[in-house]
Image 1: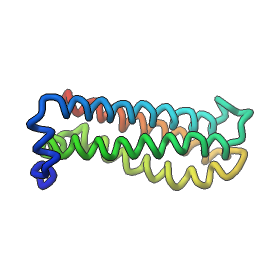
Image 2: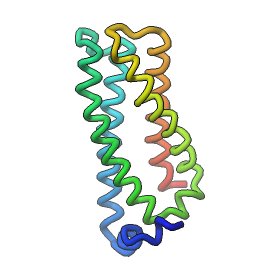
Image 3: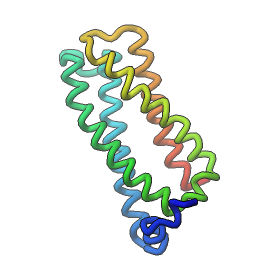
Length: 148
C-alpha cells in the first residue's frame, strides 16, 4: 500500500516506541469521543441532563466530539500507514470502517436536525440509539484489530 511507503509509515514501523504512543493517543481520543457521544445520545433519549436544553448540551459536547474525532483521524492514519496491508486484510478493520461511515453520517447530519429542537421525537431517539450502537461497534472492532 502506498501509505506504508510514506516517511511516517516507515518511521513508525522502524521505531519501537512510536506505534504504542500513537495507539495510546488514539485510544484516548476514542475514550473522549465515546464519552461525549454517550452523554449526548443519552440526553437526546432523555435519560441524562434533561434539565439542560438539548442545543446547549449538543454545542458543549459537540466540541469534544469534533476535537477527539480529529485526534483519532490523525492518529488512526498514522497507525494505518505503519501497517496498511495488515489492516486492509483484517475483518475487524473492515467492520470498523463499515460502522464508521454510518456513524459519521448520523453524527453530522441527523444530529444537526435533532439538536435544533428542544424535544426529541421518536425517530430522533432511534437515531441516538443507532448512533450509540455504531460508535461502540467502531470502538470494539478497533480493539479487535490487534487480536485477530
